[in-house]
Amino acid sequence: MFELLYKKMSKAEEFENRERVYSIYDRVSKEIEAGEKDSGVWAKAFSDSKGDATATELLYMKLMVERYVKEASEASKEDALKMDMNLEKKRIISDQAFVVISVVVPVVFFIVMVSLFS
Image (cartoon, rainbow, N blue to C red; front, side, top):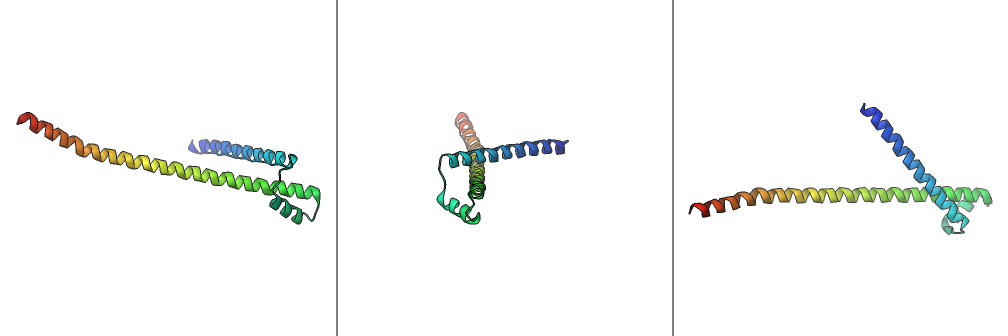
């Protein structure tokens, strides 16, 4: 039962990742059309393509997509790390609140009881 659910989630994630990559290809394509090129990446693509204009553009697109995918992946890792850190902070605060309550409440109760019976 869980295997089927996992496969469905996995396929959904795969689809989502593929759509992100297509979106990045679209971004790079628009950058090329607008004449916005990273000169260092373009020079590498030109060099590796031995001056062939079409091959240069294709390789440039591939290199830029790889760059943007890696940047997105790193950003996702950073976001996940921040979430983990926030959860840990909340857990620590919750633990501290429990300790305070478990110590303060009995002390206050004791003080109230002593003041009532004295």
